[in-house]
Length: 313
Image (cartoon, rainbow, N blue to C red; front, top):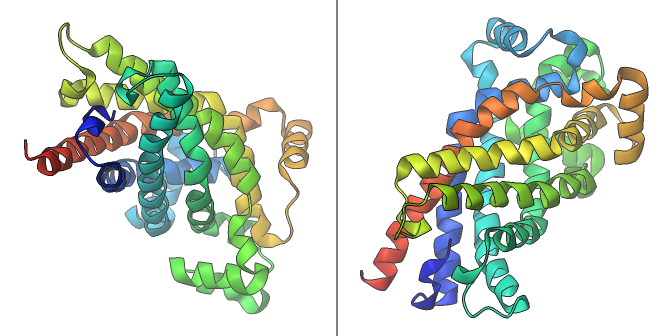
């Protein structure tokens, strides 16, 4: 994904990847936010809904179309920040991986070596993702928290948490700066293996869809969208149970101190069974194709355009 690195200065290349990643993050949220909202609600309050369609319809009846876009602002912040850092670090991690395997250029990396570089890059992107995703998940599940009476906010303050910034202020006041990193270990547990499958699925798909005599960087829009969708589906199929636990930790910690990852995982399995860890998988995989297809299409087209301008070609 960095075939032009031989002619573009590394700093410029990092800026190009960061900008292209941010563009991809915007495209991802715009195309997939309603599916993500339903996923979060099903994961954290599975007993309130019968499934994807039931949750979607009830959310629409309760809050209108805006209800399906709850948490859009933190989702935008999360995806733009995550993907900007992810793709900027991905280029650097490709270079490090190439050196580790004795290769001259990142373009010589195999698909699995690119997957390993993506996995390493996710360690850094998780640091900006965790706080923004925490706010997003809590915003998405506010109605359910009120209904279930699980908020311990004094004086009915829960009703005032109608904006992203009021939610952030509440977290900082009640839990301190460290409160923004609730679920950090769960985020790493999801992101590091998940992005191996994410980039692996994307790169392998691009290889399979590549025309004879052409390079991956010459793929048209449709193969890029298909490859991005496959990469996104691989990500969620590989790590969805981890994400379910992470969502519970981040949302339910709103009502007080929440147990760690392993304790929460075992409690869910004992009380609800293993299938509970897969509730919401359908809307997530449905969302993965259009949203990640849009992400990679926006990323690749933006990167190509900026690289072309930087090289004067």
